[in-house]
Amino acid sequence: MTATLIVYSDGASRGNPGPAAAAFIALTEDGKVVQKRTKHLGVKTNNQAEYLALIYAVESVSGLADQLICKMDSQLVVRQLNGQYAVKDPALKTLWERASCLMRTFRKVVFVHVPRTDKRVQEVDKMANQALDKARYSLT
Image (cartoon, rainbow, N blue to C red; front, top):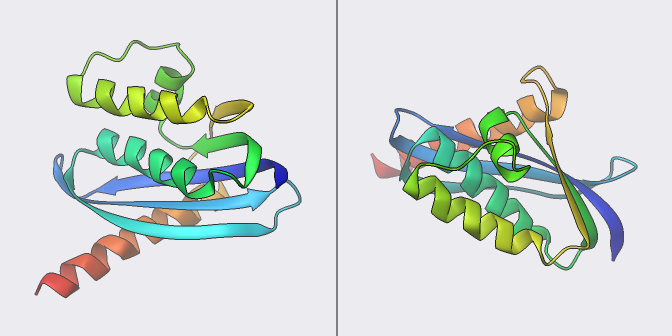
């Protein structure tokens, strides 16, 4: 088991709500990629997709580390999980509760907002959009 993993996650929605997908990359502290995955989410809002991407990532790396550094470009999700913003939307509240419960399975979890210009954030954004493209073409 690795002590700490750095997880970059992103959710994408085409429309709000619209077809959505999630993507994440999990790395060791020295930059080695441990996991890299995407998932189609059905019809979701952008904020729901952001939460679901984080949840998907955390569930996927469970048992691989005892600490997580979760990095994402959603300032709303980061601030809600850090307790800086209240969660008012009922659908997001359910996802916040699910994410919060998952975080208790780790010794320590840190949420960090990173700009969209971050190299890894751009990579997970591209992965999520490719998953949306793939899902769209598989339906036609």
